[in-house]
Length: 328
Image (cartoon, rainbow, N blue to C red):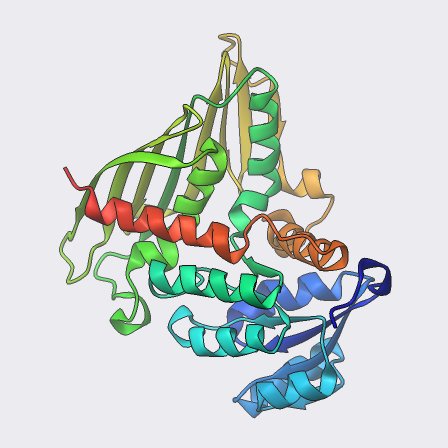
């Protein structure tokens, strides 16, 4: 029997995975929450498991996640691992009736993501995918400011990296847009709102054995038009967005800050500093990881599905498919 909201004074979290991604953002985010207790960790690499258990004072360690869930009875499991390893584990956890949070993307294919969403519904579990860019203070605040002047009529998301001569992700197990650039895809969906109506795209392999440049124009049912560019041959790493409403625009980077312009003025009417907004000098707080994890925990406590649940995440996967399938 699942707990009611009133029983969740402290949310018991069991962690699966102790790799770099988990340790850089998820463990510190959950550690910072007074109403969260990380009760156990499961990891096949026992050296990493012991290190993370000591660092975050996690009392129980396992190499068998099913045994961990049965004995520790967590309220939610965080399974942080590469997407091509997660499906069977995620399906089993949901069939055990336990709420689940995973990293992006939720699966290898859109069909897998949709099946995971159906399993979540069948087993009545809360799910979350860590698309933290849409929770970054700069992006969240910038969109809200623009919406005060009316609906968003256009937006853009650009994800650039300098990987000239680089290799495919996970040795080719995943597509770059599906596994990495999906951050920009999901952010564009968030900025524009509504459902995808039409897509025109250009996807290329530039001096590479894999597709490393993705450009798309997307029309949404909200009336907004979105522009996406994801490319690995740029001069530097950069994740930037544009948000435009009637007479107001925000240009921003969740890590480097943003500027809001209005009414034809050359100088910004507001400057968005990620550190000042969250009143922290910790990257996991300033760049959105803490905020999305706080959102997940609040949803566990109230019994609501998170904004980035499996059903919604499948829509971001579907837009990736549309970008590949709608080339000009």
